[in-house]
Image (cartoon, rainbow, N blue to C red; front, top):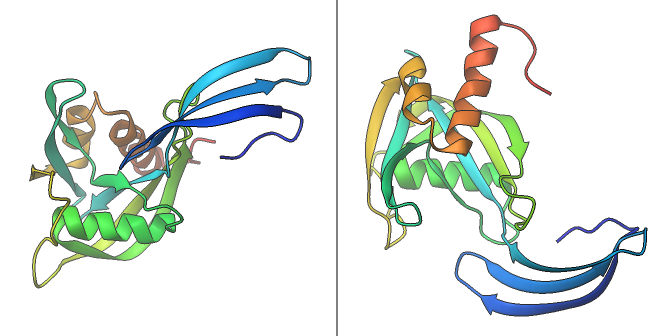
Length: 185
């Protein structure tokens, strides 16, 4: 985990090592002298992919999210392996979840979904020039079950309103395409 050079780490203790993330308890001192005791989630990062077809439709994944008790439509996405390159991880997730490869890749945005307690950074990509993999979808994680849904970009953006990474990615793309102007900073 990156730390600002002016922040002094007083103590760090692993509380839980999980398959997806670790939980640590840390004590630190800010430059002002203020001490903070925090419980944090250390996460290796994640990627999301807008899989855009030539007809301006996108491929979404519908899956159950137990933490909220609902089925959501999302862009193909997943956790990075520790140390994995983000674009390589995005290509892996696209193939695993959708059975497609992309000829062209472009990074859309990098953001922190919950910086108050989690180190996760999500990198969003646009994937174009999609072709199906001859063998179809690769074996997904053994605990994943989802269905693929292909929608026009405008409909897809409305369908993912409750999933932040998907909404950010599709809104970024819609702004680029709709206005032809500069991307958001």
